[in-house]
Length: 273
Image (cartoon, rainbow, N blue to C red; front, top):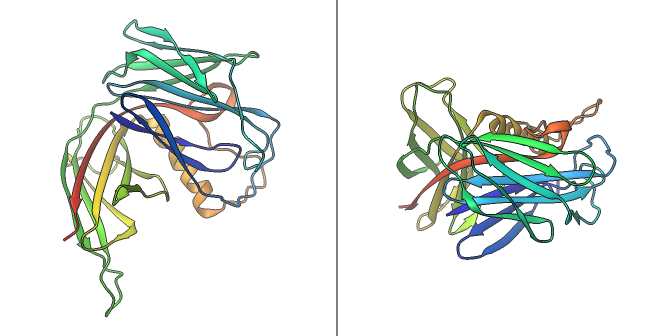
């Protein structure tokens, strides 16, 4: 099972793609955003995920200013505990560079997870619900209406997937072109205004060409994580300059930077024709 941690390391926006197979490997793609946000004293940044059928991974680091360029300092001596409302619990083990890994507790649909982190001062707590996965109905390329006459046409990606209209549901969408993740805004969707049972999502940001392979991942996430990524998109995409202190609200106690999330992932691929 593959899953991602979307990170903000050393105050810069970074996106780190984490693959868990037989072993752990991390690859980061950094995008520097010049945003005039509030300066903050050194504090901890939490980035944690438990995915369906996967064990938990948490990254802990220290930062100075929210968008500082200082060297990242991993937190290596924290105590990190994960529990579920189904009576499961475990202590994550530090594996180096601030990464804490679980080994036995795997994400289950319908479970509520609580992460407790004690870095030495006060305990940080985060809670997340793991929703049901969807089914992807179709993934198709369509000629972009913004293609210029005479140029090779670009293609947008139309994605349809199932949705349960009886519950409030929230989704994150990530797109790959020729096995390379597209690192712009975090794609988000919900059924707030659509109770048809089918979500139709179009990826407009990236131009695909004939012969490109396209892979889409749809993550079922909870409302807290959806709200966090929505605000993160607003800050990093539009260069909002706040006159009062502002940082994206997370689901962690004490206004801690970062997030703890759980999700169920499904994927589909196609070739643009």
